[in-house]
Length: 112
Image 1 (cartoon, rainbow, N blue to C red):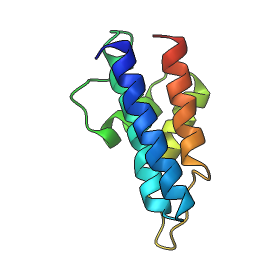
Image 2: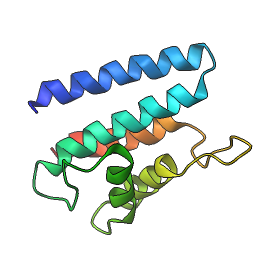
Image 3: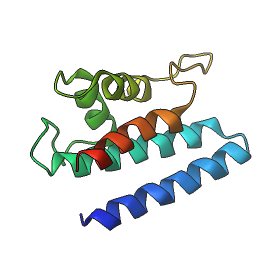
Image 4: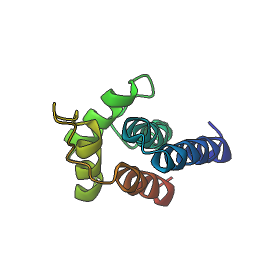
């Protein structure tokens, strides 16, 4: 994907996340954050510097990123929080999914 296209996709998901936050729909916000991270990881996978495959699904990319010893610790931790399912009482290790996604997006932008 051309550099600007993946960033445009992230902007779209960021707007969706903001809309979800405004109406209190945490589930949609979390999905948009995961999509933002996956879009960035998919683009990063195309650089050939990661074990990620562009064919992996959204959660698969987050899992591979979380387990990768090549990725920086903060990126792995953000990916791990995003890939972890919410508990039955709807709590999540990611208290701010958008911030977690932006850790990943920022890493990819800096290393693209």
